[in-house]
Amino acid sequence: MKKTNLTKGRLQQVADKIFSLLMILTGIFLISIPIVLWDFLITEGQFKPTIRPYYPLYHGSFLIGGIIIAILGIFGLIKRFNNTESQGNFLNNYILPLLGIIVAVGVCMIGYEVYTTTEYLAADNLYLLVLSAPVLGVLLFLLLIPASVSTIISSIRKNPISRASRRAVASSLVIIGMGATIGAVLTLPPDAKAKPFPSDLPFKKVLYAQGNSGYNTFKIPTMITAPNGTILSFAEARTDHKDDWSKTDIVLRKSYNKGTTWTPLEVLVKEGNKVIGNACPVTDRNTGFIWLIFCKQNDTVWKMHSRDNGETWSKPIEITKSVKLSNWTWYATGPNHGIQLKDGTLIIPADHIVNRKMQGHVIYSKDGGETWKLGGTIPTGEEGALVELDNGDLYINIRPVKPGYRVTAISKDKGLTWLPYTYDKMLPDPAVQGSLIKIKKPGGSLYLFTNPADTLHREKMTVRLSRDECKTWSESRVLYSGLASYSAISLIDSKNDTIGSIFERGANFYAEEIVFVRFPLSYLDK
Image 1: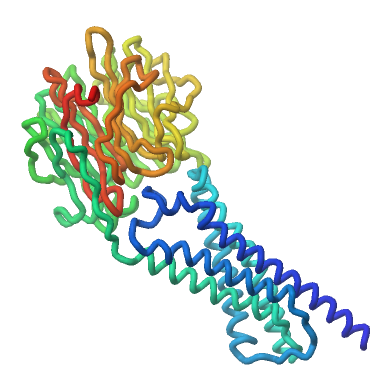
Image 2 (image 1 turned 60 degrees about the vertical axis):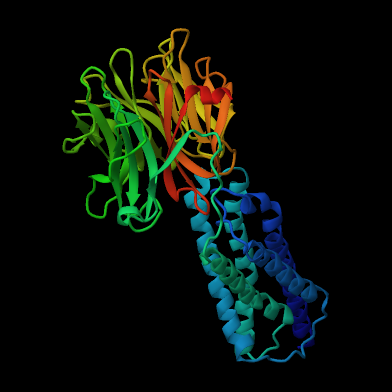
């Protein structure tokens, strides 16, 4: 009997040490999150909570929670145990262990789902943040499940319960407190102030703002200048909330005087509770038709056109079968303008997911928009922007899957195939859509590009100029230094080299409104 009790005592001591070491490891891991990812979570950008004075609570929940769990583990490691410990009470013997099991299983499930659904998008610090979810889940599972089960079994058998086990299952209360604190911070009202536009920006006007016409949020702007000079500004109008899967309509506003005044909002495409978006217009200079290619539910692809510079539009016609492969899942056109090549071919940038991998591609029409076919694929990236270079090559500039720099590629056969892609280290990008146009000049075309010029956060909306076929970008101006995201750019007056751009911007969220700005080409020389 003594030998049996001695063996049980040694096993309990080993279990106590394991629980204590796991608690220390879990605590250190939690403490490291706000330290290692401080800049990623605290500075302005897409993936952090909105800017507010409650950040100490957000980061402190990780820091203090980790410290508490680590201290509990240290106490358990240095404390000598014996078999005369009290049985505790109902809370310690049953409620806390059951709570620990629930928390451990729940955190593991959440961690696994977060990782599997976002791993293909993650990079740099974001990858570490995503990876921390399953790692933390496994640590908590190993800590809480055995400790909770052994505590319940010991209570049923009326055996002494080690203090290490109690401390381990008590960690679940600490974790719940952390979650409640983080949740409270995220639901508190935002209070950041919008940054000012550059003082020398000639003209700016809000086109769409949260709450307008009963819509929650407007996102994904695109713009094109019709043959008669009318500016068409398209956007996604999201009804229920600001996220991608809210009920969404395509809306339009027009300007007949180079952006000074705009027509009231009109709903161009809507269908029940469906997500209708990714509008991508292109003008056929041979017929004057403006074609609009768009998606429903990011699954099916549709076309419609206007014969009168955007005043009236045809009924949508589905073209999915001719432009989407059967093994592709998620699909998006644009959301940028398309282009027309010298030979009259219309080309639209698009992207898709195949085997959980994002890829870019193009679709094209050689008969004035009547039929559309699938072009070549770029084996990475998302939303793209196109121009035809003066030498006839097709250049595509693509949103990277991971924050960092823009992806670029060249096609020698009008988009049917693409040469190996490269990253343009002159174009920082936080994994967001950008816009590109070509301005023809006698001495060589100019190219303008807009995006939030940062390698991590959606901020600093910038316009850049290239004079050498998009090889380098010699001039640039920041149009808005605060939070900013999707954009569109267009030459709205070719005689006077007047440029128009629309983009998302905000203070607490990067798409609180869509603004139109206007400036001369010479603005980039300052």
